[in-house]
Length: 460
Ligand code: ARG
Image (tube, rainbow, N blue to C red; front, top):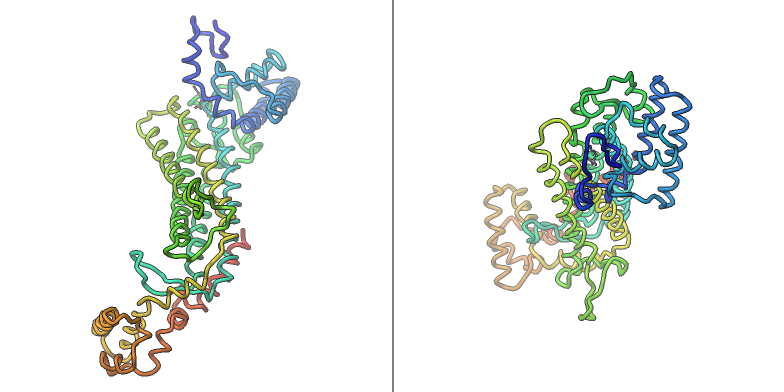
């Protein structure tokens, strides 16, 4: 017999370094509140079902409350010898209220207990993440509203393609985040299911009431299969996957902010509060936060792949490998919340150098499509028009001109169909305004989309 809570069948203690290797207390202590919440629900249920007496229930609950208070005050001395948060708390409880504390674990296993903790934890964190996504969407929305008529070159292949409204460009990220929001929100259905009462894997001989604990804990239902309940980590994989997609979106915006704030673009200036200097080059202002979020995207992907790999070869039901589900999840929660918070501040304070953006739209060939459309609308087959305009672009490049610099004679030379109104058509503002098809960058469309975005926000 050793001092371990499960020491009965053991004749010898593990060396302390072996204990330390197997222990999860260093990180699962983050689950202290969830663990206590789950235990309180469990013991209430044991009382209600007549499995332990009401007096015992009260003793256990008051003991758990003392432990919770100590945890809040940072007064708990966790011990690696007690392996994880579950056994540590049980040990504290027995120390606090005596032997009766040992009744708490009746009809329960650490396998359904840990799964319950994780479900409770993720449910809370996903709620917070949803709020943070909304905050970032609001920041994007507010910035966009200021820039409906600010023009920026739109790119494909990172080559100037067609000018667009800056609001249209930025709002792209709003809609990405809208989908991220939807994915996290939908995942709550699968997170908010109770594994408690599944026991180690097979259920229990005690006349427990799983619906009751589920109700006490605010779960929407219970796992139908006890083995599934303790083996399932899909809800964490799904969380990591949703987080990976979200981070991928943030990372793309990071990349744009980094490019845009470079000397080469000078389209935006990141606020001093979200930039850093160089220890050697006095002139530097680096977009560190954007770079860091782009970098942190890698660890979130890593966490997803790490858990998928942990799970792929596991036989049913619980295996200790599954203890590896936690650090990546905690790390992802911290990374996602931090990134979203920084991002909202970065977007709110972002200085948009609209003049430089517009200047860029005047100094390129991103209005070339207009010329082709112009000819096509006058009856020339689009393919032929494309060829004519391609030649005109080449001619302009060779003569150091942009399309708006060409004389009427030069236009006529290329095609008889060109008339004086071509100069108006080529103006970047006209180019953008005329793209009024549904979801396009035409100012009317952008305003309409902003109204829809505002509606989406007010529903959250
Ligand atoms: N610390 C363990 C984990 O995180 C708790 C469950 C342990 N169960 C067991 N039978 N060893 O997975």
